[in-house]
Length: 198
Image 1 (spheres, rainbow, N blue to C red):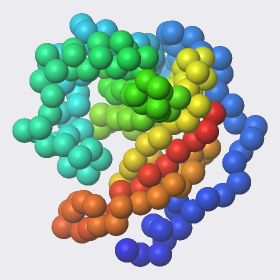
Image 2 (tube, rainbow, N blue to C red; image 1 turned 120 degrees about the horizontal axis):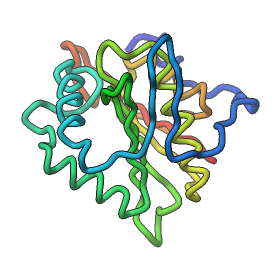
Image 3 (cartoon, rainbow, N blue to C red; image 1 turned 45 degrees about the horizontal axis):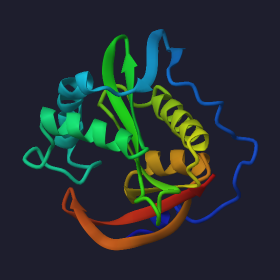
């Protein structure tokens, strides 16, 4: 792997001034002339989530899924209920009434790792670069603090520089990597593990 990509995930000083706003179940914004809402997902969101996620999976560079392994609508409904029933978060971001992404925190098992959660997020093509990733991250961190989570874990392909920069900006630090874990566009890439302690 080239040296530049490796350096993008080296530890650096945390910006202690950056803190998430207090948690609110529903957040509304006006972003670049668009109405943006972030709220908790419901089972009724499942069909639209399936449709939007399919666009991201088709790109073949962000998520370790294929169209064949993607959850169907019923599975999305089950995931939403299960994550929330186990004390986690499943949020959606809507722009002008349309779901364009999600963020979720899947909590660790009770009695052992319930104080931790695994973070996953995605945005559909055409809605990146609007600052929605930052809004989702702030919402997620505020939710985690309000619900007693002490550590947020995530994994990301080393080639996803935009995501890595965002995570570092919000205090996530490198914890490890699995080398040559995937082949994207004909090249081996590492899976990078990052975490933030709250």
